[in-house]
Length: 102
Image (cartoon, rainbow, N blue to C red; front, side, top):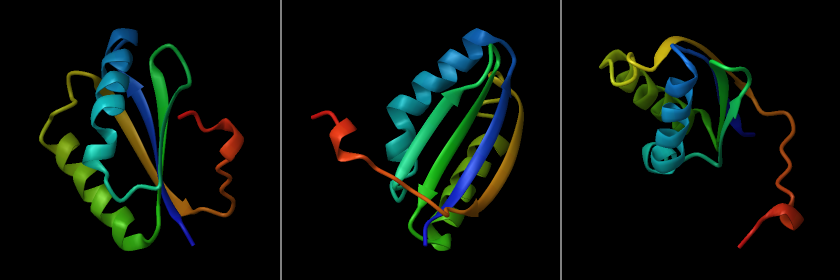
């Protein structure tokens, strides 16, 4: 069964959200190589949510350590005002091949 990290973000402003999204787009796969799915969604002018899915808890824990190091080292304090962290088992997961672009 896959397991997930879900992070709720509140950014200082809309430009901080956009800067974080660009960073995540460029570096997400490199920073979280064991992830099966990495997703970041803008949910408001200054808020977003990331969902990452991992094959097992060991991989999820490694990713949590990476995330915590980045935020504890203040790499993103100039962008992120607050982050709430959740985790849980993935009960359903659909990757639809007709939507995958080459």
